[in-house]
Length: 451
Figure 1 (cartoon, rainbow, N blue to C red):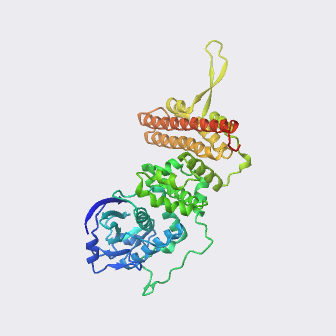
Figure 2: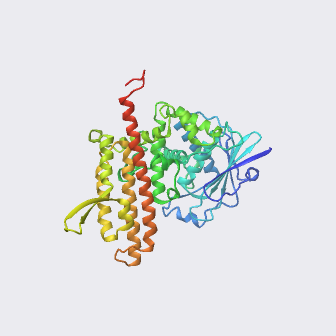
Figure 3: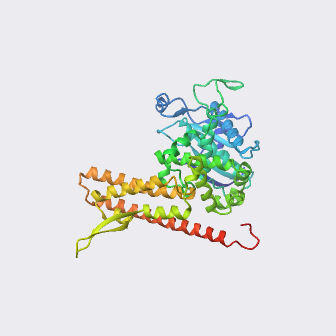
């Protein structure tokens, strides 16, 4: 088969797995549809890492026989969400390798041959269930996206792979098979499907009641911090809600299928998204507005208590200013003025700074339930920026044993916080212009339009 072009999709350091090597292995198992072949590279007996499975760290032990069944089950779960039948074209060669480090990530390689794209996946024998499903979900979606692609491998947005992964885990947990389950000629026994009526968003609802969901921009262009810890979990929960909501639009599954099919023909996923999800989205800002309303509705905010956009922006203007009492030199009379949060962060010492920023954060928290859905995220980001700055400053002060004076270590944190607040101020003015333009359009409709 003539080799043309490779395309890398790595969840860690890429290790190229030869399909021919897997095919020659005596441990190779082919899936029921023939799309997946699973082999083992070397001995995949439980390693020292495997002892952590019993201690509850979330690792599962793989074997070729169980893995090949899981591949088909994950694919079926993804197809069910998209309301598709199985018409696969690209073959997937999976190799189970001995795990060498804790929390080793799977690796994916897409290669273009004369007859189309083919895929190789390397899975460590001990792997986190979430990473296992994520790798299989990614290769299934990538195979769909590349069916009409040319020499350029399709670009999958991270929100799609993370959201679909979490949807599969929430709705069909029995897709994951691992050591300890019994295998019969008819398949795996002792597996019970997820009962109907289970809410796949139950955990998301709990998380987003305590922490603000990520914005559409953050979902589209995730930062490095969204790859680990609590920020990764927040990204996954936000992506799950985003994908779930898209699939439940009037023509959601159809649009999602067309979106996947168009990824290989466009240089970026945003172009394909706006082509296939129009209506309701003609511009990316339409997606941002819809997402804000979706999150607000999902978290159960009372629409009757909502301020108008003009009032909300006026209240937000006031919330991000800090009142300061001053005295004139001439007569010593007290007067009050206001300063921006950036001034407090950059110039005040901790003794004055902390209560002022805490008070601002409290004002922002109180108003979030009254602002229009489009502004909820902006209000939350102001509050988060202040909270994170105060937390980092406290750590520096504690480590240095200081009494609140401005240290070299806090200057960089202050500079970062000021830049963050400046960016939020720019977004606040953009929303003001957006609302003003919408008001003007309603007041002066174009001829022939419906008021």
